[in-house]
Image 1 (cartoon, one colour):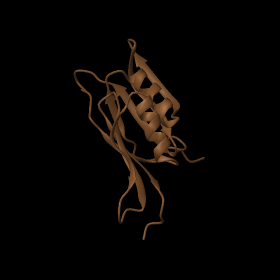
Image 2 (cartoon, rainbow, N blue to C red):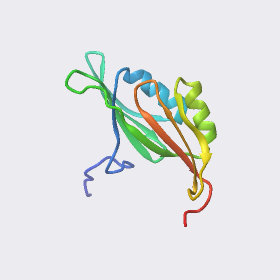
Image 3 (spheres, rainbow, N blue to C red):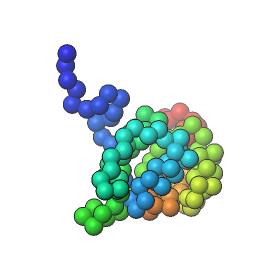
Length: 131
């Protein structure tokens, strides 16, 4: 039996978000994206590593420390309904950067928002096949 170098169902590359308030961030990801909790490890009450699944991607995260301060990621995610997701993000405490809309020459309907933890999200739904 061959041993895999990574967990089953994981991509080789995963974004890693370092935030203040890791547990609250996980709650935000569940409310907005329907994230599925996969793993959560703590040390002295602090989340040192956690993983959630967003559709087909694993997002890794941890509580910020002096050694690893919060990062300000910009993450892009394709979703089934960009308008509904953008609305859920704002209702969950996010701030709209750009309301979803279609642009000439772009096959996607795109929007963007910032989350309450310092990150930005670009979200899109493909509405026309790419040429």
